[in-house]
Image (cartoon, rainbow, N blue to C red; front, side, top):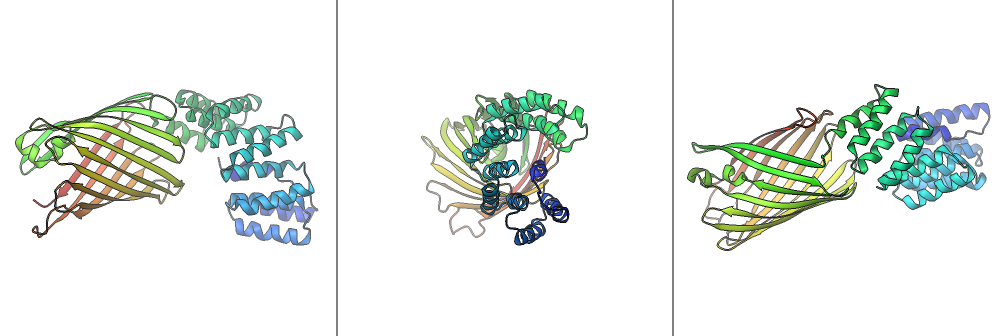
Length: 423
């Protein structure tokens, strides 16, 4: 639900009829996202009467929604200096601090509001949201359950309870909460979208299988590509076991000689918080000629904002009778709309004793629907790690990958890739 509308009812406009009408317009503009226009009205009101607590509080919310927490804090502090018990200003300070990531400060303001107004719904709601946003799903669950029981007609609390359930990996409980809320408002867009999302989340146990077909110089092969079994161990930790037969389908030399090159690995994915996720993996490749190569790798994802995330990772391979090799990569993901994002990648790799490192650029276009359907389209270009005696070291390619949620328990994956490399 749009946060601009959640708290505006608490802005107190204790002024004359004409000024109150002006400030109501400022409040409407602020809630609609026209912050500069709202700022002008609030500044004009405060120029006439600097002690107008309603205008100070309204200006504080406008700056907070404008993502200017410092200016918002100053306005709320000024309002509280005039009226220490101003509930709207206390709540505004709490939400402003929470949105800035200062969760303990936010809790203190809502606790103070609770002391001033025992039984205050706004105080309990504020504390519940702070626990939710700070990642404490267990406490948020308890508080939102109480709010649902006390306010059974407020769909906002059903949605927030479902979000807390999902934070604790309780998808079934989240669906129950959302279904109850949708009985009140059957067409509510936020509840409907969140309910659909619960069916695309990772289950406690998952089994994924992929097959593949490759054709190289007239030689072709279809076989099992990957099998992966994963399990959610704790709220932040997911473990997986994987069998990978991709090399058999992707390497021309193996296809031509009808040889197998399989890999077995185990890994973990840790979601530390909403902005930081880590992956570690260790395994072994069983290559032709009784050669075993050990592989260790990892990946780190940093979510910098709603509009930007950064990913970096790599792997290292070693073993008896095979050259050591390494690969490093990084990417930047930028959502341009709700359904379209671009993600450029850079890869650099090297095999021991090879003349040069291989460099490769990849540009991915991701299109995603509300129903969970996803299409990735991309182009690659780079330079192979060959010596200067090779006149043309260019390599290039294209790919398309589609994720197809046929149902709530069965999903499909379709992928096509073409690559041209120096022979």
